Figure 1 (cartoon, each protein chain N blue to C red):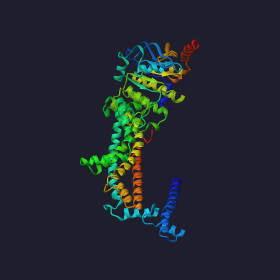
Figure 2 (cartoon, one colour):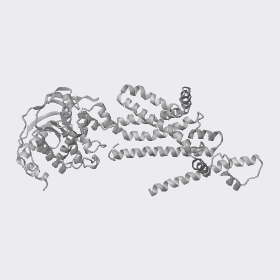
Figure 3 (cartoon, each protein chain N blue to C red):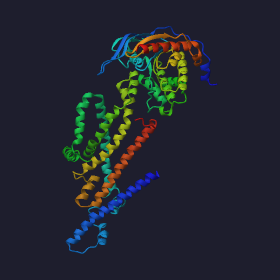
Figure 4 (cartoon, rainbow over the protein chains, first blue to last red):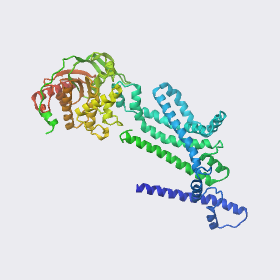
Length: 290
Length: 277
């Protein structure tokens, strides 16, 4: 535990040190160019002092991002359009909706594929092809097409989340549902078990470790999907909208703080799936058989 | 002295045997596994009759088809030719009617179910009520000496206890026929002795027909009423020996000259075949 904490902290220190150095180099150059254009004299100490205090810096320093985070999370009420919590919650809604439906769809496709050879050969190429299309290309189309039939708001974003999150679940569940022990399958055969019994009493349980591994990927993908869906559509809310408005107005602190909130949100979601996995594992005997 | 130890030393009087009927009849049965480098004759011209209440052991070196023959009876493999009747019907009908309980070499317990839930599995599939299930589970877990382990998960039990749980699971459906594929093969000798005596006790209490695969001569002699000696390439029956020993045997019987004579007869049959081979 102590060792884990130590390595975590030292990694953080290294990242922040690199970040400060990079901020100095990028913003310092910007500063020097500005001063030279005005034919002003400059010294290194002047540049170093100024590099961390530029308005609209090319790369904001960690403390600048920190100030922006405090301003937009703690200082603003949660209902304010300038609160990152407000925007994160909008993104979270479509992430969770897309994740739930994406996972269900992924499981359903996998069950179909495992139980039907025709479905495997007809459906699998489409499943794979769906993921080779860049999400940035297809997201605006989905939003526009659904907008034309008056479906707006959370639904189009959730559909894009679902589109990204069903894939890992399908792939893992096809493997997981086929992973049951040969001996256990023969045992079920000696009981003359029906396909339904074999699925619910054997395959479904054998697949669970695979399911949870893929759910962690799926929930992270769903978050990316929700943010991407907010980017091209001029959405009024959501972390994607914050990223977009930040880049419109050159508010790099705003972009970076939205990114950090997105990353934190993603970590929390994956962690929560991990907790659910542990609880379930304990209920079924506390031993991972896979 | 423990109850189990008393049972080992004191022989019980013979129990009444149900009127005999033919439980398994096999005529000219062959099984060929096709493969790229030539067909494998796993079983060749098997003829065998097993009466109800018998304890029949299949013995032979590995590759002699003893497990395959058991799997054919259980409808886990299909014979290529020949006739097989289990309790008067074909193997598939016998399986669909849940006529037999099968005990694998490994316990094959589901790791996400505790012992009670594992034993309940076949009864759930059969559609018995939870009350009926629990009655059976209590009875047979007690019979195999696991009455205090209902809520334990398989990984919390030793290998011998896991195998006992899997025997209890097979008994819960009260099948007339128990098919056992080297059930004690992975156990140490002390545990195996104990399990053999337990199995004899359960067999005599329940009056079942047992077909038992083993590669241990001592085990075959200690348990069986009939010993089927088999030989590989192709898998076939060399000899069927009817045991002159009493039905319910004890470990002490292993020092008896009759025990040694029977073991020696089996050994000779196996060696003789090996010399020809």
